Length: 333
Image (cartoon, rainbow, N blue to C red; front, side, top):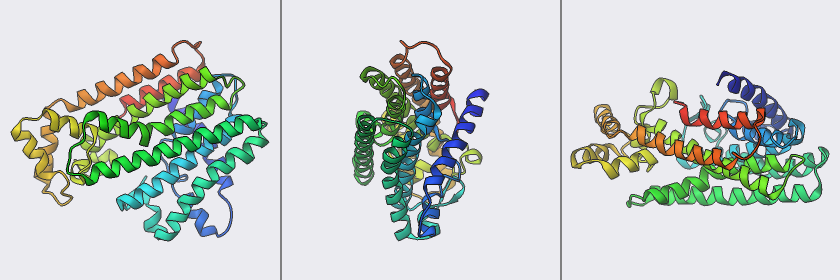
């Protein structure tokens, strides 16, 4: 796992530097706002998957950089808009863009990140020697992924505003679109950046990304409910207070007896809920072995991800992708 972290940190640094280099223009304040999260941390797993998917089929980092940057730009666009919708103050330990720069600049910063994602694929993809047909396909699948992300966000908002508790399958469909789509397209863009961009390779790595992305969100959900506040920087039971209908909360409500269900619903959606009541709700969820159930479901998705690439020879790039999926499922932050 240490090798993965070293490899990830090295790649992240190069992707960040390249991405920030194309976020340069006037007015400077707009570009400063757009680059806020790029410079402030985050796991950067998506661009890592772009590059490793490219290397898996004989490609190199230089060929994959435009695609890696495009995914990171779209991800950061979605973060800025998510923070606006949730009215969050802090992300990655820094002020959210709309809090620091104001809502108008934040909206335009998100827009320019979105626009730059397609510009970098077209302009820098050409510079690195990609054929026009490959660049067109990259733009097609990235734009499709963006549609899915927006649809997923729309479903999330719809679920949040409804008094109805969604089914597990409805929730999984939402995160498949909102979260897993960017993991899926990351791997697909990596293959398209390689010397062997066959349909079967794109399909197999897309499946790997999709199931890995689902596992990522399930573990994120778990951390939002039971995560250590000293590690996450969030209050205990944050997602319960926020009234988020996440996977562990849905599982808990489905399996809880009347007493435990009442304890959970007592603080669900009440941001100012008494700390003791919140801890009671978290304990009620934990007592149902929800963590074990969530990690089991995440592990099942990880296995599906591995099955998608099982037929390929062992290489350092494939091993890096496998390690990244294991890291996602085993992490506590």
